[in-house]
Image: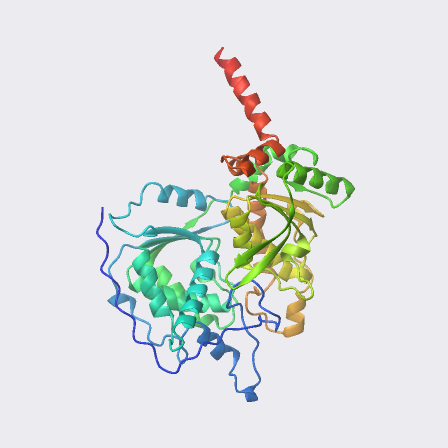
Length: 463
């Protein structure tokens, strides 16, 4: 096996008299709730003494002054093989190629960290980075820019970083990507990534995008960029061919519509079958420094039930959910039932973005998602109307994408994933384990009966 690379250069000592200031509100002046620590902050008036939006955002990810203060030159970094950046439309095969790349082509060297080769969704990786930066600030209040220290730690842990679904809509994430990956590339890290967008199309229309452009240049220098030009969405093809797609609501369907009495009754029966008589009650999940209330769940069946308002909506007096919450739900439960999804337009763009983030988290964790909705999956989003936040606050910043084209682009991936999550193959993978939840999934959706019938047919064929 290859030998471990030399350690990256030590970071500079922290400047004195530095103070950590994390945001308490999002881009629209509302509480950040559960999500990224760095969703965005309100701009302050010139006489407030608190600085403008840009300076405060720069202070969150470290540094200030010029956009490339103290950042190393890639040419002077550790020599390493080029990575790969694959991009293409939803369902064109990027994830399958990534699966084949990882198993078994990468062999960590003897004695290397367990994370020497690591695969992670970009949202989850950035969440971790922001949390680690926050922890460093708390442990060492005198610390200035945390990014050199984070880059050093990450480079010692991981040599090959495999990133799924590279997409950038958050200004603080954009700044962190630029600052962090310049140092990771300099330290010799190899990055293999997938995205629906070409590098030049990342963060289009974003606030202060010129400060993000060095990240794009670094990616193109350190990765071979390859476009998958297939126009076929294999997830949709699989959904159309799936036995589950043709079943009536009272059968094994996992996406039920419209929102009428029959659909509600079918959803209740399916929930009862999925929990298989186990006790259900409200539960509380613990996250870093706060809690997340789940309205109804079965701990034994690892199943949770939410209304759309509870999972993706904005409720008075309750912080809205964000990426960290959805990742926690996906880790805690094997089954999520989401009821009452309306047809969404740009008037509900914030709720749409939360739904997109939740589906990403559930899909990556192989969670069985049962949905009741007003319309079929393909009709869930209509690109019409105006974002009420944009009307109220002007510039659309923070984790808010810039126009309806971005919304349509992002939802295309979600639609593709929702289609695959309805297929027999996806549901069978969710029910493929030996936990009680797996057994109950198979029973509730009739997969155990299908398996018995298949075995019987195979036996008759052998005879």
